[in-house]
Image 1 (cartoon, rainbow, N blue to C red):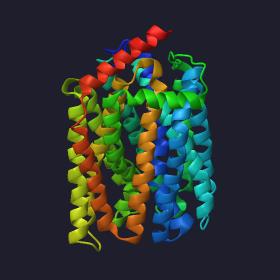
Image 2: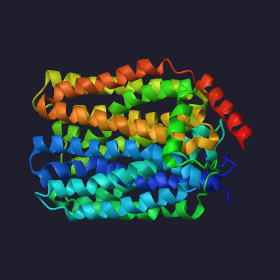
Image 3: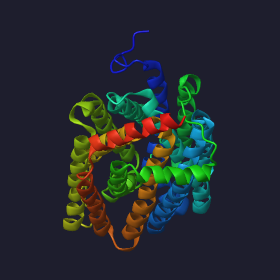
Image 4: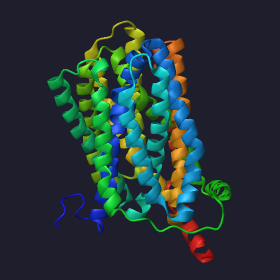
Length: 432
């Protein structure tokens, strides 16, 4: 089979495609459940009180992420020691798909039941995302890791775009023009996830791991000690934590913020469709140029885009606090799409560069733990400030997350981080 670009230049196109298909599959949960439709359904239908809904939604998202913070490094250590990353990945995906379908059972006024289903579904999704990322170093080389990471990210956005087009057509044709009628879409999200996992289940191979006689908790302690010796990884994770506050907050509150700017109903699906097109196009560009310009420069550039976009929202809310024009948020949405399309793949790639290959699941577990901790703190802080202080204060905080993250990112030395990873690989090989 002759693979199309960008797979053609890779030595293992079939495995990279199968890996990317899982990214494509789980976009149904990212977009429809976390970002677009379920937050609005939960806030306006399941809870029925917008202010209380903001507070409960942020608390629910944060609770799930705090649990993931605890589980991620433990699961990573266990997956490496038992050689069971693929098994854990499939279990997380199947469980998340089943719980996603169960969200369709949530009726008006059942806010707490909605949280009890959403929280474990989100936990499984987030753990699966960490495990998926841990396959990256084994599927790539130092020269291609940025490209392979961006391919997976691009496939995710392509999948999201396809799914949103399907949902938009069905929503307009079936008259699903209000949140009360969105429950069938949650079934569609579950089916999409389940079907998209099949290539990964059939083709993706279990990465080589260093078998350890240590238990999961002992190995977790060892992982933290090992990570402390990788100074540039530690510096990056601190920067990632801070700007992750903002990225995770935007993912959880994009639809709610769009509603604050007057974008509602089926218009919300069209808005996210635009955002996804922008993000997907950005991911394609990143796949082509990231390895040439460097991941650090790429991350810094996208953080600048995030700062401008969030500062624009903050400025509009300060100047027009009540009923700001919707077209402004449509314009700002392009900046949000660019930021989402580029920052994730670059961040994932730099962790792959800094992680010794025999401990990738553990180090990506720490990366995932950092990202989830960022979400737990950032989403909770933003949601509570938005609910009890006001939109302007919350958006000012959001802008600050990215500004401080950029300053911290400037201190990261990529070359030194790669050297530490290679040194860790040599030390690991000498102990075998």
